[in-house]
Image (cartoon, rainbow, N blue to C red; front, side, top):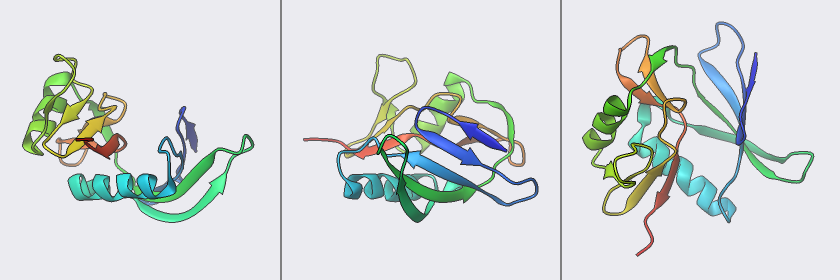
Length: 138
């Protein structure tokens, strides 16, 4: 099965414990893209990403190839559930209560919407599979 979004192609084989992602880099350098993955793994270890390679798509856009645990979605997370998850991780809403972008003293989480945060079928807890993580500029 293949699922495509604006920034990623996701491949899954029935019964596999992981998905394979071909993720477009929105970051200005390869190092910033890798830093974002390391930050994601630190904040969301339950959905840690493991880089296995790099490629370019037909338009020349740099992409990171990675694996990530396959998580069964019970349902999409609500804004309140996303707010709570972010707060438990030490973040506060950064966009006037819209519940999509969060910030801490040093790190920003962006794109925390229900397609990227959903309720895990096994644990019934909110789980983030894909958001933008970056250091806050000071």
